[in-house]
Image (cartoon, rainbow, N blue to C red; front, top):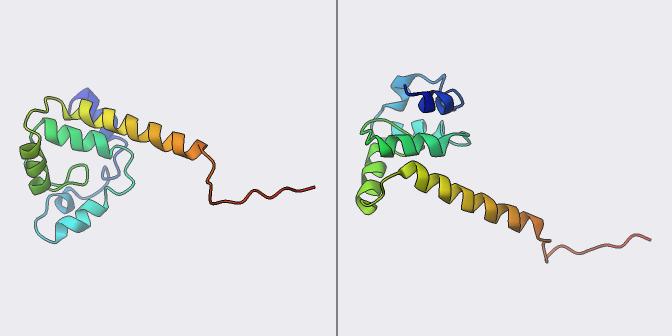
Length: 112
């Protein structure tokens, strides 16, 4: 493991999972993907698998088939890590901006 992988790997939801349950086929892949739900390093994990063209197992909540399809759709991407981190930053910025705006469907009640 490289230093960078060790850093995010230590925070992965699957770090204590049985590896045999993450490198499965067929319907068992959906159960394996469930481990990734809510994982704090899902983006880093997926980027690692895509950048390193890892062919087997569930990485970042994607199967090998899903990753191959993504690689075929975006053949010009040179760094999935940069792309996914930039997309996450935009998403977080938008989520933060919308959370700061008041919900127009909520009524303001004055006390007094």
